[in-house]
Image (cartoon, rainbow, N blue to C red; front, side, top):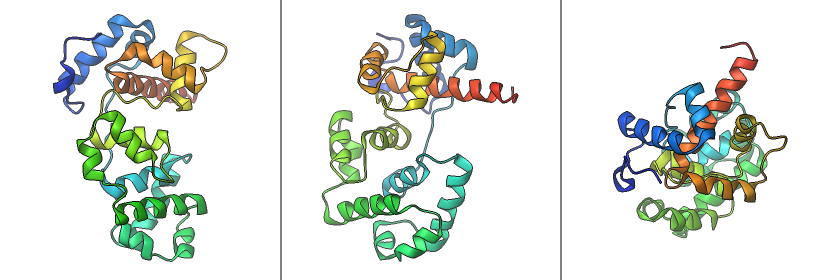
Length: 221
């Protein structure tokens, strides 16, 4: 287990601390070592928190960053400010005209309703342990485990959260390990145990690796 950076004080936005955590992982795991040799220390993915941050994560799912950014920009123009109230008051057809799919509109409205009725309290989520925060988030219709994990990592800076169902992560692992098939989610969750207490750091290493590898395949590097 890495010891150079105490888990209670790891600030993922502090480059020196993040570097030390990455190097500790690389010393213990050949997969992370290979990723580190290829991409170095990645930038931590930081996204806005609060309801708008959650809704943005939903909007960006399964779309290219460029396409999602265009759609989300239209939503922001339509609503003025993305809040539970403005989303619930918005005309669904107007949201559809922005490019939002009906399922995604349903999800962000469900989350808005949960915040409005108090069943989801994002301030409480911020103070909660990783497990308790995940449980409160996924109890809301429209928030799956992946969305919850990405929110905790990117909006709250949680460093030991591991989105084990993320295909990009399992594909990066497969590529580095030279395996024929990706690990299914349950197996990959067990695989990730080796990276505690920095599973989120390992996830960022794998994301960075696969993005760089794909860019190289396209001839960009």
